[in-house]
Length: 220
Image (cartoon, rainbow, N blue to C red):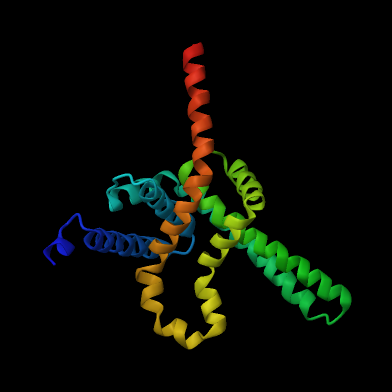
């Protein structure tokens, strides 16, 4: 029985990680409150989650705020871009959906698909910004390409990120009753699960970049 409560036991390790996820979720939620800071807050959350995914030791608060500050400008710009594009696509979808014509139905379907793909790009862009140093344009291009190439991973990531929305459609009452879980735990858990998937996708690119830098160093 005592072994179960040993600091290195699987149970205590799991509880410790769960506590870390609660802390990360709270940091993310608080830093998202101004709305326009959702971008850098999400980048910072993924910076920490990717460290966890690779089993690297990290001080949560210091690593989070370091990444938040470093990626603030690009995170805010990306956030505003997604908000503007999302608002335009949503408005176009509702306008076309109310036309009640075959052309309107086709157009609304196109805008719906575009909106879903935009969300997929967004779900890739923030962790890519946390992992790689690129311009916003290049990050968005890479996110679009990778989300299309890795369709299976994209579906999983999309569903995980959209869980509260899906639950809201199924039962708004259940969503409201479980709101503390979605605020205090879900962001960190979802980010960690996604980070495990993203780490496998990103590692080949990181390895290639390291080899390229090593070759340049040897040449010099």
